[in-house]
Image (cartoon, rainbow, N blue to C red; front, side, top):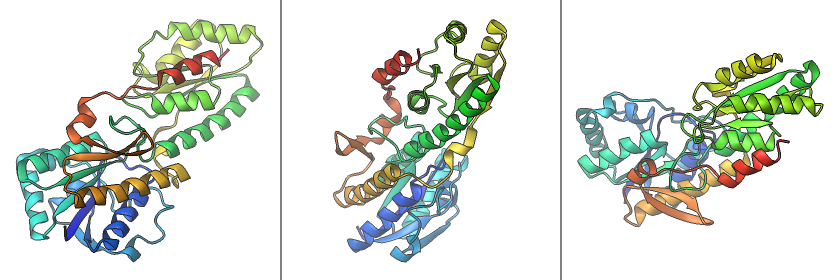
Length: 321
């Protein structure tokens, strides 16, 4: 292993820069040169590559987003696009590729390896925490903290105006963020994609809260729940007549400086990705499990389902009285 490449792909996540930094500095320590690919797979087939050294990643560990930029590439979905990218890597004498991203990015890396024999290691970078094979993904902890900070502020407003706030957090296919925020934010109810329960139940919950003297309530909804936050809010408004407001947090959850847990996780996984390539591993994601580093075949990260913590789901319900 003389030269490796690293790219970030798909949605950005706080901590990606810490992972890039760890890849560059670990590889340099081992005498391996690193090439950074700008704009993900889209930039790869266009040849947007540059050598990265330790100083190029200085003062980046605290920054959100990704210094390598990211993009979603339609061209990469075709065999011709992947063939062009593979040729670019050969022209640059790259011996292996580290892909930091989510399941869509891992699909791209998987097919690159299958079709062209380029060793690929995946590093899980997605705020949704929905990848099988790792306890947590880079960016998740920061996204939860960002959403929780917004919930705390909205609770103040809700209490002042005696309103119901229905807050939508990210999680198109998974309710991990919603569950953590619901428990930490003291929400009265939480709706997640993994449990498509009826919205009718929330009406009775709100009525019961009012009967107990609660003048306001917080309801958390993952964006992937059928009907979304607006559907839940409409049911509450129509069923109780209480003033109800919807707040969709959206992409604010992707931004900001990564919290310490994401910086540590990203640093550890970036280091592990380089060692994995050096040890001859390929076609796997490096993740955290049982307190250590675990390898999961890339295809399993999207073929197998990572469930939410059901104990936490029960906890959210128990503490909502």
